[in-house]
Image (tube, rainbow, N blue to C red; front, side, top):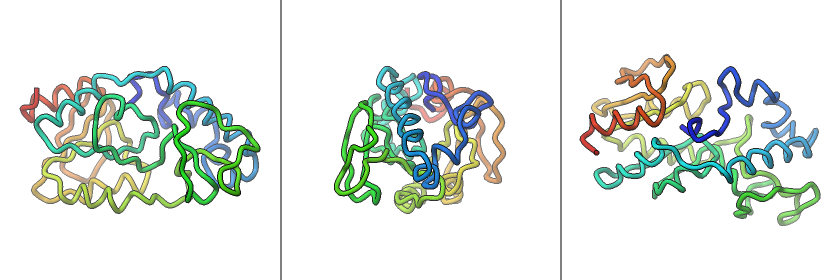
Length: 213
């Protein structure tokens, strides 16, 4: 969704996981082993995000609120949906511009600044407010409820490889129309209307199909 805004994806051939081991920067074990490396990784992502703008895909979804009750469920940790004007955004995997304590009981908006080693929140080291591999996804139940009540479900730019988020499409009611927007082929067991375009062009086509222009 945010690739056209200049934000590196994770799973493409030149994505972040080609440059960093998941185990080192996106797991609780990596955090315990080398917190400075983890902080550096997310500090860099935060600095990059500060200068990124929503693309036409983000803006198109926000504008669709004029015609539909739009709920955004995102695996992305950036804030570009909010910048574009979407009013109902649920972040499954956390938010880059927030920090928390070790237990995620205290959450603080930090904007785009760095988190420093030794900086504390509550009684623990401050850490990125990110759901790492191996951690629970607290918002998944709310996400499932949203999908279960949908008339139209749109999947944009997801490889459908990361669970539990990838399973959300299976909660769509039998009568719901399901659209999948991605420039690459994506395998799914669900019967979907496939729009093989990037986010911006794909959302534009979706709006024409749904009559929201």
